[in-house]
Image 1 (spheres, rainbow, N blue to C red):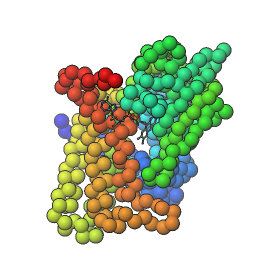
Image 2: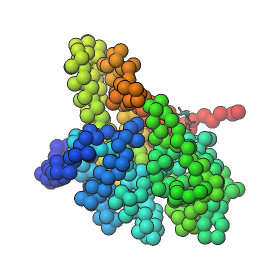
Image 3: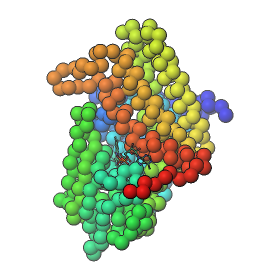
Image 4: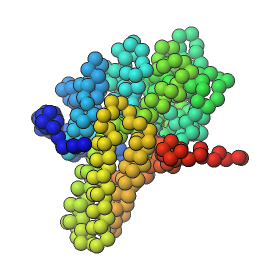
Length: 395
Ligand SMILES: Cc1cc2nc3c(=O)[nH]c(=O)nc-3n(C[C@H](O)[C@H](O)[C@H](O)COP(=O)(O)OP(=O)(O)OC[C@H]3O[C@@H](n4cnc5c(N)ncnc54)[C@H](O)[C@@H]3O)c2cc1C
């Protein structure tokens, strides 16, 4: 396998660079690449305007097929786009859940009417989405979902509670996994509904995190309504559709912020060189190790994605998720050691965290969301190594 750019890749890379050189200016350049994971509330309005600039020039949803307004970009092109995007320190995207999760799910499972209604506003940055899966008793064990929906004429009526719903407070719509067969249990009898957020039956309560920001929320449905046709896949077949979305989440959708790790590590090396920590024999070993592992991660991601035209298969996706989540958590710890005692001090009276402090705190969550490290190990143990299924508690 040759991972160097072919002539057509060079041409595509140049096209991306030209676009970024011309448009990543003014208020967009001033954001300095902020607004990604763990920093979602930063510069939100500016990032929303940037999303529209991307859309006007055909740089949103580039992996979607052309008939749905995408570029039909190959996996290689998507990688190149993300690499250049991260390198240029372009703003954190606001529409990742719509573009990366719901859009591909609708393209595979949606009706023609659903595609016509929901895909264009995602592509144009006009409607933002959130993911209503987790509940207080249904996280890793998603099949335990208790939120219910019953039909009332031409509408579904929802009741129940979701939790950890990222960006719900900024979203127009939510894709919700809920129980539409009241007598069902586990993964049977679930449906995948598209629910508008701006209505009296939906209450969003932000959860304030260690980082002092509120990126995710509790969402309460109490008589919330959505049209009967807003069910993706068959009624009662929501588990299959929900898993398809998760496969997208664990696949290429994760690539984007993996690539921003390079910038973060480069910045950390620059800090270490400036503050003298690059002379510390242990820290320099750890910095070199971080570089080696990041390089391995990049090649492994490219290898897993080559020849793939959709979500990455579960074992590869699990290995990648386990690797990058743990790597970034370790980088957060290394960053604080490089900063030394100043890592415990924050700037100004607004308790503004710097890049590394934010990353240290937020990276703890990266070994949890999108399937925790333990769950990924279960998948690898059972599906790759053929180990017996995990023992169930007897209580
Ligand atoms: C930053 C962030 C953003 C999120 N955004 C969203 C979102 O937008 N929408 C959404 O629906 N959800 C979201 N989540 C929720 C996320 O999907 C859940 O946190 C995750 O699935 C774990 O579920 P839980 O928190 O209920 O933990 P639990 O499932 O209760 O797990 C607790 C601990 O037990 C371990 N554990 C659980 N089951 C097993 C097992 N079978 N074997 C071994 N160990 C096990 C876990 O690994 C974990 O360490 C987000 C979470 C975070 C941290």
